[in-house]
Image (cartoon, rainbow, N blue to C red):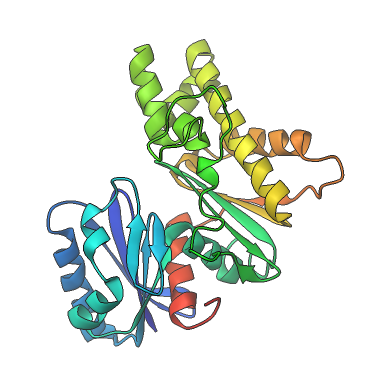
Length: 293
């Protein structure tokens, strides 16, 4: 069994899993003292269930060898100074692996999830930001410096767009990440204040909401097209909180991709995980067990 810890943006998920299946899960809210609370919760899980290894996911670029979060632009600032591999060993006595959260989610979905068995796939997670990851010929892409595949949300989709918090201009995330959509809703002074309200308003004929949704869909679609052009997948996995809207988001993204892909490119299948809240934990279980390492 493996102890898995997912440092998410709004909550931290912990679980003990056996071959990708959850045995027990817990959550810790993000806030002051969260690292200490995670360690306490992890120690209790280790004492009760005796996992033999740990996997830790963080929402940013990682240095897997050093066990550190390299850059996350404001998310979990305390983790930037923490050797997570050493922390796991001293805090709850387990050897650990560390991975970017989108990569871990992809591993979870191609192992025991919505794209089980896929050897060529990309994942796009639509939430506060836009997370991406890719696997080609069964190998999860990481690159020479652990940046490969995970920065799809920071592809430029608007050369005249504004400055993203990453420093690039016109990133998809700066247009269609939930943080950017909330910013634009506040600027317009619309009655709706978050992404799900915007989608619901667009479906009931709100023209302003429909315009914002259309712009977001085009940004999401352009990102997916670029991922397909770069990695030639059989499957595109769409996940994240925004996908709770289901077909209102997934259907137009797939239509955009089908229309705009290079003419001879394979038109991939699109899937949505049934248990997206478990994707990262499932992937960490596989990684901690030594597969896809």
